Each structure stands twice: as structure tokens, then as C-alpha cells.
Length: 312
Image (cartoon, rainbow, N blue to C red; front, side):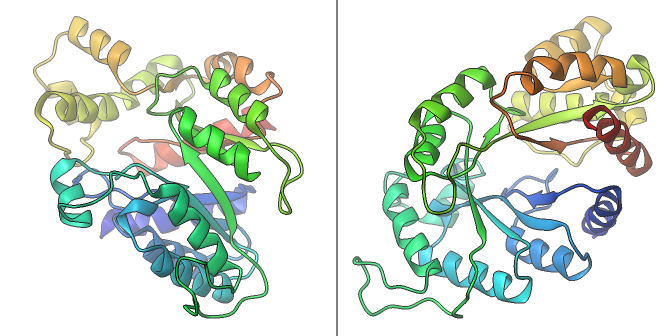
């Protein structure tokens, strides 16, 4: 409950700072992540904010019937017109056991994702897809949610380009070089009715503080969380820095964990600016969406403040 309220407060805080979007990802069977139902959180945050776009980063489409996703997001768009983003992903957002519980034993492993996408978009446009004639998705809407394709590999980049969609690359958990993926996206891009030129967003895990040392200390929480997940398969609630410090790891252990962990940018504003510079100056990335996994909410807000100053 506390984490959900913290998310709402953070959304209101970054809206006042001038941030453009606030997204929730779909994850299941993970004690350290609270967004099992992003569409519910989108409605809650949109109802308590005024201008910021709120959306999914993303909805894992193979976990759902396309008709249901269309109806949910048409309803959200009707309630908050011009403020809803529908980011779509192909991965399950969970491990094998939760995927089986979500999709059943005979699921397609995402192979029918392109067809699901076509059906979904047709329903969003107040039409019936050829695969389901005379089946309509309500309510009827006059504007569409902004549709994004998400990905952590070449599949999403190529599909986004083929359909003329904006593309968000999950750099925060992919070790594939981001700029190579964005080049592939641009090469694959075909203009569409909704988008005339490529529009790329990089999702990055950034922990920024006044000094490198302070930022590295704040990062211990997510370092430990990821390490436990890799070693045991268990997702744990994000530990405090004190809990992480007390864990039975040597300095060398922490160094190796950081080298092999989720990609993230950690440091002072000067350090973060230097690390982001190749990406921001590439001409391939139009937006940055920032994940900041730190336990202390004031430190989290401060990190977003410092990042905003870097990006001005």
C-alpha cells in the first residue's frame, strides 16, 4: 500500500517539475515490484494529476485478450482524453510459473503477437477486425491512446519501424548496445498516419545524487535486490541501504555485482551527464524515460530533480 501511495506522490511531484510522462510496467510474482495491474494504477494516477501523460510501459499483450486491452484503454482515453499512453510488450513480465498461470499450458509464447497487435489497433479505431467480424470494442472514442512499441531486442525495434510507431528500448535491463537498436529502428521505419518520422525513447535506470559516493551508496539497494534475484530466483522488496550494507558481501563482491547487474547510470550530475552524453548526442534518441530504484523517497525525488537539471 505504501509503495502505491509513493508512486502517486512521485507522479504529482514530477508533474509539477514539468516531466511529460509517467509509466507503469506489468510484472507478476515479483515481491519487489508493485505494478501487477498497470491499467488500474494508470486510472488512479491520471485521476489525481492534471496534465502529465500516464501510461503503460508496458502492457504485456500475450498475457491478455486483445479485445480486453482495447476496451480498457478506450475507457481510459474516454476518461482522460489526450493523456493516455499504451505501451505494448511481448515478454511475459514474469517467470515461467506465473506465465503458465496467466496464459495457460497451451499459450503461444508470443508468436501471435503481430496478429494480436493488428486486432487491438482495429478495435481501438472503433472497427471490427477480420479475425472477429461484428465484434466491437466499447466505448466509442474520438481520439486514440498514444501507442508505443516496447522492446529489449531487435524484434520490437523492427516491428515499431514497420508499423510507424514510436519505440521505447529497455536499456535498463538489456545488454544489447542501445544505439545499434535505435539505428535498426530508424532503418526499419515506415511513416504512418500517426507518425511521420522515427521517434525513439530510451528507458534508463539512473541514480543521481550530489556526489558519486552518495549515489553509489543509494544504488546498493537495487544491487542487492538484483543479486538475490539472480542467485535464488526470488524477487525481494527493495532493501534499505542499511540492510544492503549489512549483507554478507565483501567489497569485491559488490564490485562484481555492479559489473554484472542491470545496466544503470550511477553518480553525481557531472558523472551522469558524461555517461548519458553519447546517447543524447547520437541524434537517435528523442526522449529519455527514467527508472530510479532507491529506497528513500526523498533521495528518489532528489535524483529526478538532478536529472531534470542535466537534461534542460
